[in-house]
Amino acid sequence: MGPERTDDGRDDYVSFVERHQHRLLRAAYLICGNRHQAEDLLQDALLKLALRWPAVRHGDPAAYVRAILYRDAVSWWRRRRREWLSAYPPERETGDGDGALRLSVRAALDRLPPRQRAVVVLRYFEDLTEAATAEVLGVTVGTVKSQCHDALRRLRQVAPDLGVAAGPDDGRSAGMEVGR
Image (cartoon, rainbow, N blue to C red):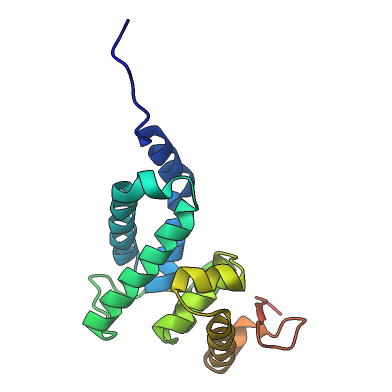
Protein backbone atom coordinates (compact mmCIF):
# COMPACT_ATOMS: atom_id res chain seq x y z
CA MET A 1 0.00 0.00 0.00
CA GLY A 2 1.25 3.47 -0.88
CA PRO A 3 1.22 6.50 1.37
CA GLU A 4 -2.23 7.69 2.37
CA ARG A 5 -3.24 10.87 0.53
CA THR A 6 -5.16 13.58 2.34
CA ASP A 7 -7.50 15.90 0.51
CA ASP A 8 -5.88 19.29 1.04
CA GLY A 9 -7.81 20.84 -1.86
CA ARG A 10 -4.80 21.68 -4.04
CA ASP A 11 -6.33 20.09 -7.12
CA ASP A 12 -9.59 21.97 -6.51
CA TYR A 13 -7.69 25.24 -6.13
CA VAL A 14 -5.69 24.72 -9.33
CA SER A 15 -8.87 23.78 -11.19
CA PHE A 16 -10.64 26.90 -9.87
CA VAL A 17 -7.77 29.15 -10.97
CA GLU A 18 -7.63 27.58 -14.44
CA ARG A 19 -11.40 28.00 -14.91
CA HIS A 20 -11.71 31.57 -13.58
CA GLN A 21 -8.41 33.38 -14.08
CA HIS A 22 -9.26 35.02 -17.41
CA ARG A 23 -12.60 36.38 -16.24
CA LEU A 24 -11.09 37.59 -12.97
CA LEU A 25 -8.20 39.23 -14.83
CA ARG A 26 -10.68 41.07 -17.05
CA ALA A 27 -12.56 42.29 -13.96
CA ALA A 28 -9.29 43.43 -12.35
CA TYR A 29 -8.31 45.25 -15.53
CA LEU A 30 -11.65 47.01 -15.80
CA ILE A 31 -11.49 48.03 -12.16
CA CYS A 32 -7.97 49.47 -12.28
CA GLY A 33 -7.50 50.30 -15.99
CA ASN A 34 -3.92 49.03 -16.23
CA ARG A 35 -2.99 45.54 -17.40
CA HIS A 36 0.16 45.22 -15.32
CA GLN A 37 -1.56 46.42 -12.18
CA ALA A 38 -4.49 44.10 -12.91
CA GLU A 39 -2.12 41.14 -13.18
CA ASP A 40 -0.51 42.12 -9.87
CA LEU A 41 -3.90 42.57 -8.19
CA LEU A 42 -5.07 39.18 -9.40
CA GLN A 43 -1.85 37.45 -8.40
CA ASP A 44 -2.11 38.90 -4.88
CA ALA A 45 -5.79 37.99 -4.67
CA LEU A 46 -5.15 34.41 -5.78
CA LEU A 47 -2.39 34.11 -3.19
CA LYS A 48 -4.78 35.33 -0.49
CA LEU A 49 -7.35 32.83 -1.78
CA ALA A 50 -4.82 30.00 -1.61
CA LEU A 51 -4.10 30.82 2.02
CA ARG A 52 -7.83 30.71 2.85
CA TRP A 53 -8.79 27.97 0.38
CA PRO A 54 -9.91 25.34 2.95
CA ALA A 55 -12.39 27.81 4.45
CA VAL A 56 -13.56 29.37 1.17
CA ARG A 57 -13.57 26.48 -1.31
CA HIS A 58 -17.09 25.23 -0.57
CA GLY A 59 -18.62 28.69 -0.76
CA ASP A 60 -18.20 31.12 -3.65
CA PRO A 61 -14.44 31.55 -4.15
CA ALA A 62 -14.95 33.78 -7.22
CA ALA A 63 -16.91 36.29 -5.12
CA TYR A 64 -14.19 36.13 -2.48
CA VAL A 65 -11.53 36.96 -5.09
CA ARG A 66 -13.63 39.80 -6.58
CA ALA A 67 -13.98 41.31 -3.09
CA ILE A 68 -10.21 41.11 -2.61
CA LEU A 69 -9.62 42.70 -6.04
CA TYR A 70 -11.92 45.59 -5.23
CA ARG A 71 -10.53 46.21 -1.73
CA ASP A 72 -6.92 46.02 -2.91
CA ALA A 73 -7.65 48.34 -5.85
CA VAL A 74 -9.26 50.88 -3.52
CA SER A 75 -6.23 50.69 -1.24
CA TRP A 76 -3.97 51.30 -4.23
CA TRP A 77 -6.10 54.25 -5.38
CA ARG A 78 -5.92 55.78 -1.94
CA ARG A 79 -2.16 55.51 -1.93
CA ARG A 80 -1.70 56.83 -5.46
CA ARG A 81 -4.55 59.36 -5.66
CA ARG A 82 -5.13 58.80 -9.37
CA GLU A 83 -1.53 59.31 -10.44
CA TRP A 84 -1.26 57.20 -13.61
CA LEU A 85 2.24 56.49 -14.78
CA SER A 86 2.89 54.30 -17.78
CA ALA A 87 5.96 53.00 -19.53
CA TYR A 88 3.95 52.72 -22.73
CA PRO A 89 2.38 55.41 -24.89
CA PRO A 90 -1.41 55.47 -25.10
CA GLU A 91 -2.89 52.93 -27.49
CA ARG A 92 -3.75 54.27 -30.89
CA GLU A 93 -6.96 53.58 -32.72
CA THR A 94 -6.38 50.73 -35.16
CA GLY A 95 -9.32 51.42 -37.41
CA ASP A 96 -11.34 48.43 -36.27
CA GLY A 97 -14.59 49.21 -34.47
CA ASP A 98 -13.92 46.91 -31.52
CA GLY A 99 -10.56 48.52 -30.77
CA ALA A 100 -12.05 52.00 -30.82
CA LEU A 101 -14.98 50.88 -28.69
CA ARG A 102 -12.63 49.21 -26.20
CA LEU A 103 -10.59 52.40 -25.90
CA SER A 104 -13.74 54.50 -25.49
CA VAL A 105 -15.06 52.25 -22.72
CA ARG A 106 -11.71 52.27 -20.94
CA ALA A 107 -11.41 56.06 -21.20
CA ALA A 108 -14.96 56.48 -19.91
CA LEU A 109 -14.34 54.13 -16.97
CA ASP A 110 -11.18 56.10 -16.13
CA ARG A 111 -13.36 59.18 -15.64
CA LEU A 112 -15.46 57.52 -12.92
CA PRO A 113 -14.63 57.59 -9.22
CA PRO A 114 -13.35 54.22 -7.92
CA ARG A 115 -16.60 53.05 -6.27
CA GLN A 116 -18.73 53.93 -9.32
CA ARG A 117 -16.24 52.18 -11.60
CA ALA A 118 -16.33 49.06 -9.43
CA VAL A 119 -20.15 49.02 -9.46
CA VAL A 120 -20.29 49.34 -13.26
CA VAL A 121 -17.67 46.64 -13.76
CA LEU A 122 -19.32 44.19 -11.38
CA ARG A 123 -22.88 44.85 -12.61
CA TYR A 124 -22.35 45.03 -16.37
CA PHE A 125 -19.07 43.33 -17.19
CA GLU A 126 -19.18 40.65 -14.48
CA ASP A 127 -22.99 40.42 -14.75
CA LEU A 128 -23.55 40.31 -10.99
CA THR A 129 -26.90 41.09 -9.43
CA GLU A 130 -27.32 44.19 -7.29
CA ALA A 131 -27.29 41.99 -4.18
CA ALA A 132 -24.13 40.15 -5.24
CA THR A 133 -22.43 43.45 -6.11
CA ALA A 134 -23.38 44.86 -2.71
CA GLU A 135 -21.94 41.79 -1.02
CA VAL A 136 -18.65 41.98 -2.92
CA LEU A 137 -18.25 45.69 -2.17
CA GLY A 138 -19.47 45.44 1.43
CA VAL A 139 -22.22 48.03 0.92
CA THR A 140 -26.01 48.02 0.83
CA VAL A 141 -28.10 47.30 -2.25
CA GLY A 142 -29.31 50.91 -2.08
CA THR A 143 -25.71 52.12 -2.32
CA VAL A 144 -25.16 49.92 -5.37
CA LYS A 145 -28.28 51.35 -7.00
CA SER A 146 -27.36 54.96 -6.29
CA GLN A 147 -23.70 54.49 -7.34
CA CYS A 148 -24.85 52.76 -10.54
CA HIS A 149 -27.33 55.53 -11.27
CA ASP A 150 -24.70 58.21 -10.71
CA ALA A 151 -22.10 56.29 -12.76
CA LEU A 152 -24.39 55.85 -15.74
CA ARG A 153 -25.38 59.51 -15.60
CA ARG A 154 -21.68 60.43 -15.58
CA LEU A 155 -20.95 58.05 -18.46
CA ARG A 156 -23.73 59.65 -20.50
CA GLN A 157 -22.02 63.03 -19.93
CA VAL A 158 -18.43 62.02 -20.63
CA ALA A 159 -19.02 59.43 -23.36
CA PRO A 160 -22.34 59.96 -25.12
CA ASP A 161 -21.01 57.97 -28.11
CA LEU A 162 -21.10 54.76 -26.04
CA GLY A 163 -24.88 54.72 -26.04
CA VAL A 164 -25.35 54.23 -22.30
CA ALA A 165 -29.12 53.94 -22.01
CA ALA A 166 -31.58 53.54 -19.18
CA GLY A 167 -32.98 50.07 -18.59
CA PRO A 168 -36.62 49.03 -18.66
CA ASP A 169 -37.16 49.86 -14.97
CA ASP A 170 -37.26 53.22 -13.20
CA GLY A 171 -33.77 54.19 -14.33
CA ARG A 172 -32.21 53.47 -10.92
CA SER A 173 -30.42 50.39 -12.29
CA ALA A 174 -29.72 51.06 -15.93
CA GLY A 175 -28.27 48.84 -18.61
CA MET A 176 -25.42 49.56 -20.94
CA GLU A 177 -26.29 49.32 -24.58
CA VAL A 178 -23.31 49.79 -26.83
CA GLY A 179 -23.92 50.95 -30.36
CA ARG A 180 -27.42 52.31 -29.84
